[in-house]
Image 1 (tube, rainbow, N blue to C red):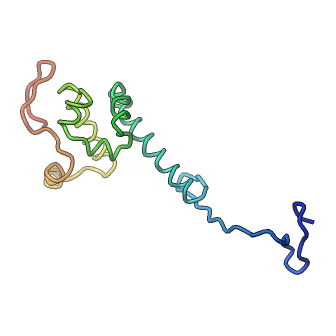
Image 2 (image 1 turned 180 degrees about the vertical axis):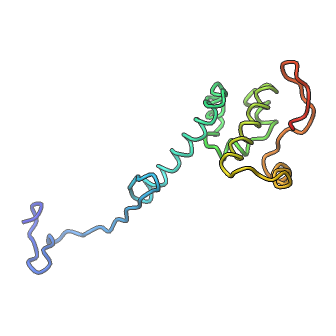
Length: 144
């Protein structure tokens, strides 16, 4: 008997029990699990990356208001508009500048240094980095 069931002598399998086929996947970081578990694991990693980004860049005070508004991952942070961050999240201009600069630095370090033309194209088509003149702590200038 196997697990209290009669065993078929030819197949050595329990009689009357269905065998489930479950695919186990392995992530690059060594995590193993079903497809659903893998998706949850990847989502948790994305959320951790977003939270770490904010705390590592001195913007941890915005974790709760961003989370409350459904923004947790780094990709979600990248998609936030300046208006959303200042109006809904209540970031001041200096925090917004710090946030945009940190996003830019993170992208540059992740993908290597971008050529100036590629960076300009990215700024126009992707994350909008402030190009207007701004003032913070007595400093006045453009982003560049």
